[in-house]
Image 1 (tube, rainbow, N blue to C red):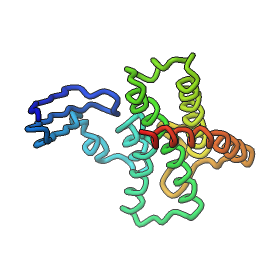
Image 2 (image 1 turned 90 degrees about the vertical axis):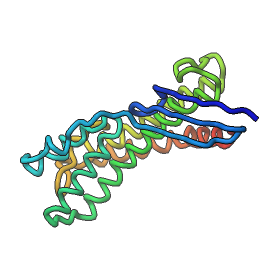
Image 3 (image 1 turned 120 degrees about the horizontal axis):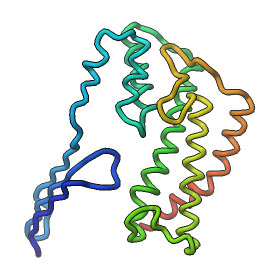
Length: 203
């Protein structure tokens, strides 16, 4: 049995900045300390005195990757503060916005942050394009990500820092043609998603 102290001051392949301290004694982990190293950015102070409709776009800047989640959360908080109940259509559009974000972010996390470790690669761009399986992963990642991005774009205006969602609704609705195209892209990406699941099932 071994004993060891491990400190990682800068963990890669995560969104943001983090560090990790481990203490192992006689082959057992005795202590784990995972710390998010984000400095205060004073968003709560920055929105004081601002018009209610200005708060969600400001708070979406908390994170560039998951900004649409922050804007949805901020909109819901503002609506709760004034007792505003959105329509079922608005809720459906918000769910679609979040589905687009989740599809895109899962592709980002699973392929770009996690999958390189499965192949002993330093990063996703180190995958061997001449290796059939690794080449397929490269293609699948961007196909899934693009499908999620497109869904968010047609519903929320942009896949990052959405412009259409607002208090009580959306400033713009997707066209029938855009919805049909989103369905086509999502259906086309389904085999890639299933291949991704199969890869992680083998871990």
